[in-house]
Amino acid sequence: MAEMEASLLRQYPLLLPQNRAKTVYEGFISVQGRDFHLRIELPEDLQMKDARLLCSWQLKTILNGYHQIVQQRMQHSPDLMSFLMELKMVLEVALKKKQELCPPPPPPQFYSSLIEEIGALGWDKLVYMDTCLSTIKLKAEDASGRKHIITLKLKAKYPAESPDCLVDFPVPFSVSWTPQRSLLSIHGQFLAALESLKAFWDVMDEIDEKTWVLEPEKPTRSATARRIALVVKPLGIKLSRNIHLWDPENSLLQNLKDVLEIDFPARTNLEKSDFSMDCGICYAYQLNGAIPDQVCDNSQCAQSFHQICLYEWLRGLLTSRQSFNIMFGECPYCSKPITLKMSGRKS
Image: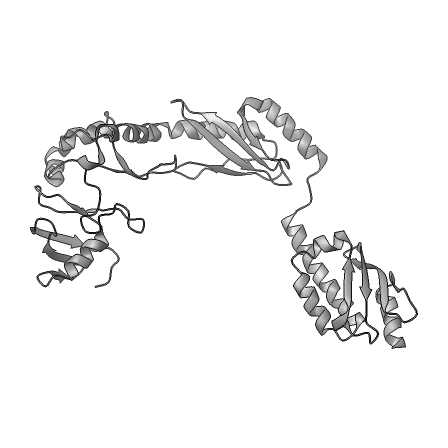
């Protein structure tokens, strides 16, 4: 016992007994150069499994999420010395994790220089800034009047380290950076990228405004595809017959109109009943994220189906046959021949 008490005093000189029975210890435990106040109350037999640990608010905050671990270590420690060693290891882990999650704040000049940079750029370009000044959102407008946002994640070593830039672009965006550059430089590169994408967004906006876009329902600026409603029969024949009419000087939408000999139906001009979007088998539009993309070849029918619905339907017919990944059968609506090319499905 005397040997353990001597060892306890050497290892934890700031934690002292508060009574002759040495059932109460109070003081500090030192971890990573920091002192944390605590009080340990032992039973008369000095068994740790029945001991109580009272922590300061600072120690409680650090050990938040580790209470069960500390309790387990206390239950299985043979004596106070062993428990204090276990507690110190838990504290070291907790402090390390806390430092990783909450890196030290940048120096004062970080904030002053950042405020100067925003002033040089123009406070009217600032959309959002968090309380730590680590996340900043800037706005810009392209030549067509579209509004765009760039989100900057500043690092503690800014401007020595380039900030992370998040944009809603269909292509990757990276900034050319040196420690001498500033927010003004990033904003300038952002504007240049917007100008390079203007023609693409003009085309996509024309499609969104003048056609019925089925997917995506709310396209973002990074979306590069549109699934649109068409009323054309048969599409393949007209495409091959009129492909020579494609004129690079015209817009994408105008070329499609000329080649396919159609006017695109707009959502404002059509009711849902005018264009059958629902699957003819399950009577739903979306099924596990998929929309009806299989259409009956019979121009008098042209009913659409989900691929999985049509596959299950054809598989249940005795008259259907399969060749590799293509199934042949009858349309559930008009009973005319219909084929289904299965993608990614095992027979």
